[in-house]
Image 1 (cartoon, rainbow, N blue to C red):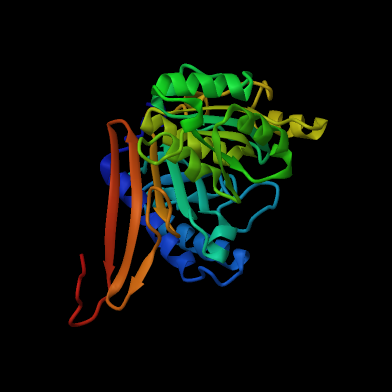
Image 2: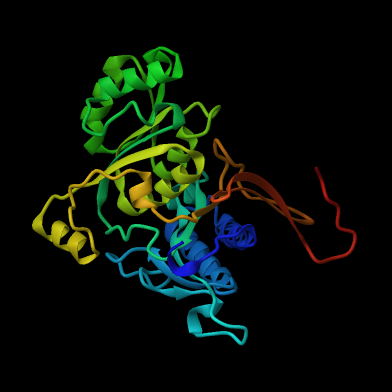
Length: 335
């Protein structure tokens, strides 16, 4: 494994704690109508928690290089090893991709599917994606060898339906509700498939597409490239697939891509290309209720969180319900 990192289960539980704390912090702002406040709370909590993890970590997907975010920016060093060696030796070098709050507007309005997210890999195991848009097609395990990013939506939907043993009319496709998707939406509707339009959160939708029983069969359209890398990390663990290509609209976009080490900005990527590390860990916690995880719930004696933690090696997916108990007498725990 590159960098000699062992992405073991103990480390995955550390990353679980990071996303849990970020979710709890921004859940306190839920429904207050202030997206910036929600994002700031998540970022601060995630950074503070990351700095307690026994890693020499580098943020490779963060709050962005475009807006020059003050916290968790690309290239920032995190973890106990970030300030040098500890007495017992060097800590493992880990590349980290974060979205401290996917769905800032969802949290601010109390809408479903706001989550906190982190993916980690051995060094150079995650693509250093520029802060650009990306064409995406996300499907589950049954359909991953039947579709193509360059195929018309009707052809892909027919292939997905065939691989699932159902009619196209039974499929649900998630699409971001954006003006740029008007043609795509019309093409999907022409097939008879159903569309679930979302305001934000194509990452959580992508995870749902790879899990049987969520009622989501594909995600189509254009979204952020950093979220595409995070989705790829999840697909590596779930055996799903993402097909993706950067959207290059002007020479500056191509130049930015090349500066980040992308030789061919028009390449079609799959999950193994975007998240190539041998040891992938993906962790997410629900902030508001969603199709996979419940949102943060506060009660008198503590806080309850719902999370998913996944690993590619060993292959393991855990749905974790945690009660964070208040330090006081006469605490009562409810099932």
